[in-house]
Amino acid sequence: MALEALQTPGESKSAIWTPELKQAIRQRVIAIAWTAKIHPLRPKCLHRSLVLYNWLREQGITPKLEVGWGDKIGHAWVTYNDIVLNDRADIANVTPRLSRV
Image (tube, rainbow, N blue to C red; front, side, top):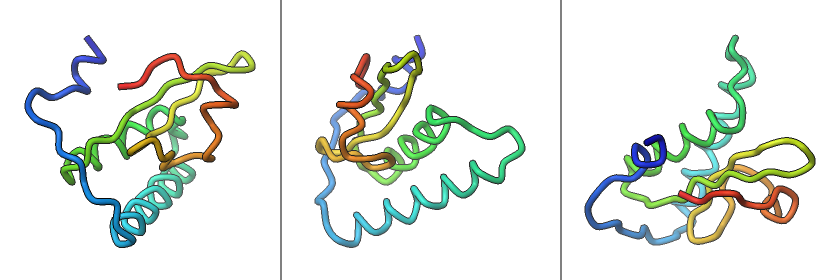
């Protein structure tokens, strides 16, 4: 049921990866990380990734929310065209994927 909520019916469109789009995403990732750092509830990686994922969807971009497990800890991140947006580039090697939505 939770996975179904992330998927919306209809055609998915792919945005053109431009320097402007890359910069806008980078600024959003920084803003989300900064907000999470000062938020009293200390949102975790899944919360931060869901915020980014939803914002990208609102922009007409079709990202992937990825969840992995490694070293007895879970982790979540967002990718677009197999580019990691809110974590280190090799995170899928460090934290192997369990799911990609």
